[in-house]
Image 1 (cartoon, rainbow, N blue to C red):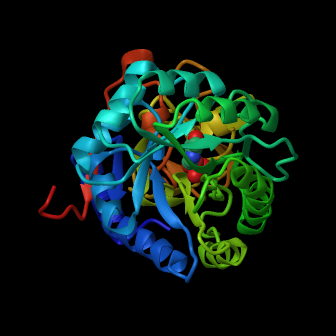
Image 2: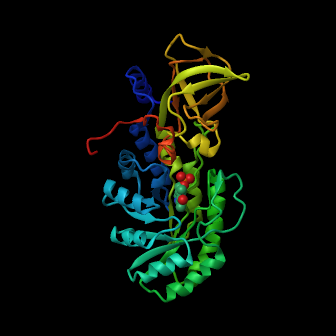
Image 3: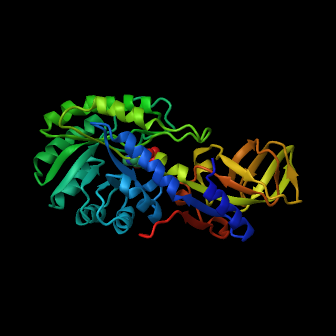
Length: 384
Ligand SMILES: *Cc1c(COP(=O)(O)O)cnc(C)c1O
């Protein structure tokens, strides 16, 4: 599961005393993104926007760019950053709690589509008096069976609230209704996402027709599953694209905005074992760094998949199931519990996989003031 270039770099970093580090395989990322692009390229397939919040690193954005139709940003900070990285890329701007300053910045920066989250946000956008193209974000009630994260809460508008937008739009002809946006849940497989998309389209078509929206656009969100328990099991992009193409009607534009399933596979958090010990019957390997660098397993309450690269040290070791922890003084600083790691010893290198999305950028870096990890982007091209 670890690629050859990452394995080699991990060894070099260990020998140089330069762990922990995030190591990204950009060639693998380009190949993965090209595969997604190819799968989506069926007649009637959707446009592909990348949700920058999953991993906004410049080299990552630049590696992805040739395979994308656009990027979705969710804050003024992401907007400015992505514009710097990719000056000409098509942009969509979503997310709750957009300020007037962010709405203005979006229009100044040529954001193509604003995803409006509430009637009040629409009122404030209209009051700016600027031309704008919007998708209204809808949040249909319903069970999100199998979802890792259902986006209930303050996201989007339920069908009652969205009614109020019709009057607001009628009074603000400079704000053009282009369609509907929905991102109801994360962590779904292709059949579940397709059922969800069908539900959204079925609701939205008559509503947009009533609103007089011609050639409607449907942004169906992201949320394509990444299986942390089985990293080789991948989302069925081809089946999903065929299904979406089957749902699409003439004149409609479908668009998706995945994040996690695009970049998760291209990053590793590489570190080393500082101590191996037994406490109250359980074996622990204490690793340099911790979840202040890779918060994903603490945030999602899962075991982060990993590989041990043995270094043949003669310090403490175990062959028993072992819990991998970091250097933080909290019992929550756990990467994986009672994992079957084979033999693991002090000095061994541990490479955590699926660390390319929602990893460093969601972590509480300054907690305990340990050194920051290094960052290594393998396969950079000259244009960076
Ligand atoms: C987070 C988010 C995404 C991306 O979700 P993934 O699970 O990373 O694919 C897409 N759209 C919206 C509105 C989001 O909030």
